[in-house]
Length: 219
Image 1: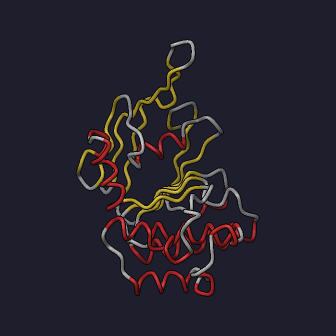
Image 2: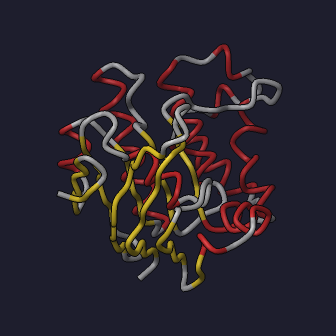
């Protein structure tokens, strides 16, 4: 298995000093190349679980294992290094770097991972319809163009795992369908596994598997 989460518990402190449980005993597995949708109502713990799978946070108990290594047990610097090398992240808010042009944003993650491939970045730009915009600034792009750039950035280093949090949440229906098709096409081409948090029935239906969170547990 590429990714395993076992008996994950996560809570957050309240102002009262009490702990608010968010995830209660969540376990899942993901094989290489598999696509998985995480669905559930707002507040069910979907984004929290995605952040734990990415090593952006640690569970209170339980383990997240990536490529056979216990990601959740690593110190902050080691988890950041694992993310750079093995995980591509796609966010609803795009999270592009405003001081870098399109070309530099596209190659940013691959350079951090030490796997920058100019030919692959050039091919990604063409596939994503970004070639005429490589010298443009992110703020000049449409929402759909920004999200395509964010997808390209996550795939530039060819990581084995892509984690996406509501990747089409800020897009209209036509752009959402186009971005979804590109994301699935490119992850399949690189052999990456994909986990996406989504409220969209269309995205959930396009994944090979779906898990539903309800009140911090898999239903």
